[in-house]
Length: 375
Image (cartoon, rainbow, N blue to C red):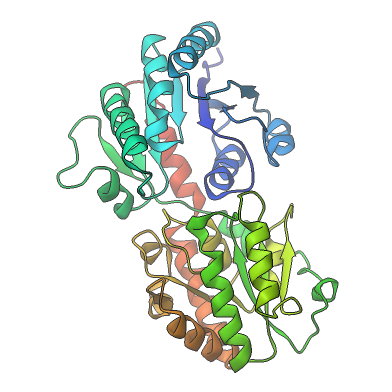
């Protein structure tokens, strides 16, 4: 007799190219299909760039608009869950998962998981109050909470964390075998007007304030003065700041030094073409792009943040700086670009670290346990 599979539905804004969504894709590719079936509920207008692969992997993509009407959303989602008989609901919207978990409790779903992937930030007193209320809903309705870094736990649940529901620290991970395979060609740098003599610094992230593109471009301007052969490749889509960043690039005379790329199906092609990866974010959870870059053997230079430190190989933690410390970012990048042997040594150290501590298989098995009956 075939054992009934445990049905899990994950709630996200959309399946666009972002850190949470990239981690979810790894989960969809790697979960135990003998025991589980997983679907995706998205609340935004667009299912996102990953949608075709989600469906190829056998997951349903279900649209349930969220908007500002929580009552209507909870009513509709409760009815849906009762019809579909899911065994687990996993919200990936931090405090905003509260409505989905309330619906899951009303529908009798036994496993209700709230996942927090990024540190909390100030959104103004009214939104902060609303999110505080939603956090109370999460605490009342979740059977488990996950955070991807200790800094996220402290950000949302400062001091002594609640005994119930239990908080599980589950670090992000990547498919280290896939990223370390080296069986695809790097992006052709000539498409950007760059030649073999140039040294490439890369960045991955949506064009939103969190990612600090303005600071990245200031770093680029200073670095190019010290290392004229330095070039930058910015990979990202979405967000509201791309035009503003493009204007800054033009005003600083960097148009020939900065290239733009998005929509890559295989991110290894980007990482393999880089000499160094740089992530000067204002805040992060545990950034997938930083882990991917290390898995591809690239040295990293980044902000010294609570979620970035544990995601960085110990051999490269001296490459982490205060987000406003542009001179230190520039000096570190210049030093790495001048020393190929150092880049190679740090890249190899990063690969070993990610393989030993941040392989996605470890995270997948931990998440699967949370969906089991009685977990």
